[in-house]
Length: 70
Image (cartoon, rainbow, N blue to C red; front, side, top):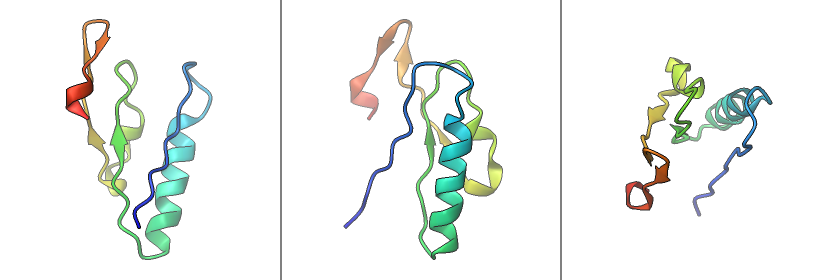
């Protein structure tokens, strides 16, 4: 069964991208193929980890989250 791990926090600079990258690297080392998605509308740091093939998902339209994009 597939599992979803979400790294969430409203404040910037707390290590969300770092933790997400460590988790993805761990899963990859165990033979899994993690699907990595960066939804941060301001700072897409996680998207910069090219070796993890992170996908950028634009979920914001102005100040509104577009639920249909999920």
